[in-house]
Amino acid sequence: MASTENTSTQWTSTQAYLLAIICLVAGVAIGYLVRGSASPETSTPQPTQAAQTTAPASETAGMAQPGMGGMQQPSPEQMKHMADAQAKPLLEQLQTSPKDAQLLYKIGNIYYDTQQYPDAVKYYEQAAQLNPKALDVRTDLATAYFYAGDSDKSLAEFNQVLKIDPNFANALFNQGMILWQAKNDMNGAVASWKKLLQTNPNYQNAPQVQQLIAKAEEHMSMKPGTKTDKPATIR
Image 1: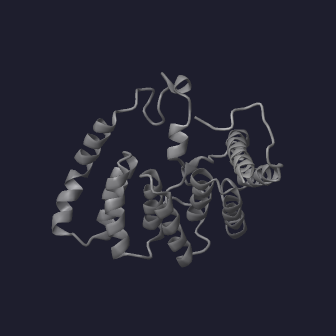
Image 2: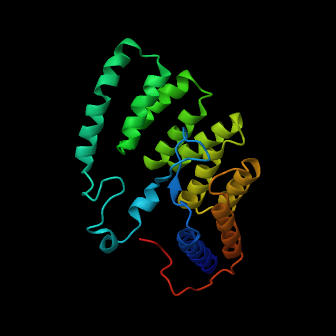
C-alpha cells in the first residue's frame, strides 16, 4: 500500500505542475478567478491565492505589483487602513439602512478589492442572506471564501449558485479553478470548463479554455510515476 500511495502523490503533483505550465503557454488567465458581477464576455480575472503565493521569492523581488503603477504593494496593515477609510461613509449609511443588500455588497467589494477577505465575507454573507438569488453576490462570496482559506466552503457556495443557474459562467469558471488548485481535481475542473463552454458559446476566453481542457486531458492520461525534468511542486 505504501508504494501505491507514493506513486499517487507523485502523479498528482506532477500533473498539477504540468497544468500550471500549460496555463502559461495557453495564455489564458487560468490561475485567476473572475468577479461574479462581471459579464462573462468582459470579466477581468483576479489572481487566486495560489497564484499569489507560489512564485519563488527570487522571481518576485523588485517586481511591480498589478495595478500599483510600478510602486511596491502596500502592506496588509496599509491595505486594511485603506479599506476601512473607503468603507467608512458606506458603513455610516448602513447604520440607517441595515437591510440594504446593495449597500452591503458595495462594502463587501471594497474589502474584497483590498484583499481583506474575511471582512468581505462578512458583508457578502449579509447581502446574500437578504437576496439569495443574487448570483453575482454569491459568486463573489464563494471566491472570498477561497481567498480566506476555506476552499470547501467556497465549493459548497458555488454548488448553491449553480443550483439556481446551472449555466452561470463565472461560477463555472471559478469552480474549475478551485477544484484544480485547492483539490487537485483535474477531472472536476475539466468538467466545469466543458460545461462552461457548452452553455456559454460566446465566452470571451473560449479558445484558451479549450486548449487547457485538451492539455489537461492529455496529461491526465499520463501513467503513474511519469517523470519530468521539472520540480514536482510549485513553490
